[in-house]
Length: 248
View (cartoon, one colour):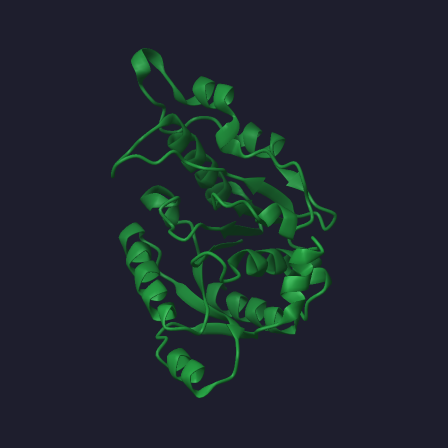
């Protein structure tokens, strides 16, 4: 069983990485579940599926499962049937879910949606077999301490620019705060230059792979095709191999 969270700032290619890894694991015969945890929903289209209902929009179900007597909240609502009913499988057999947006208030904010979506993640992380991939938003607060212990690896996707190390520092702090122990890096959109190489040398975490900049990824998006149908998969196959070496 492999459970991986993929994080990075918007536009670095974390959804593309998540989709291609899901495809490669499914191709090898694994049962794969991919969950879009980003408010900017892109993973379903990257996996070639449509009409996936964001779980945060299930207002009646959330109210029924989470809200108890006198306005209390159930910390562990029943969600296993919801997990099955509101996921969609693509043609490769990958199960796709979308969390949707958690309403955010001040620090320590708690709401029925938050409780419900965290329960979905706990169910996925601790009960699903084979491979689970989480396409996270720029932060990883969705996980929280209650679920982070089940994540085998956090992959930080970065571009070879000045902000890459800042992004890694932020992810490192968030990971430490919620108990994720293993972090690795994928460098995306790499264009060979002395400056880019110098920045990469400063990364202290294991580097799973360096993906060259390619117009193919842009074309896949423009043509609304899953990236694994039009892109060179060799760098991603090496990334998958290294992931298995780390988590096995």
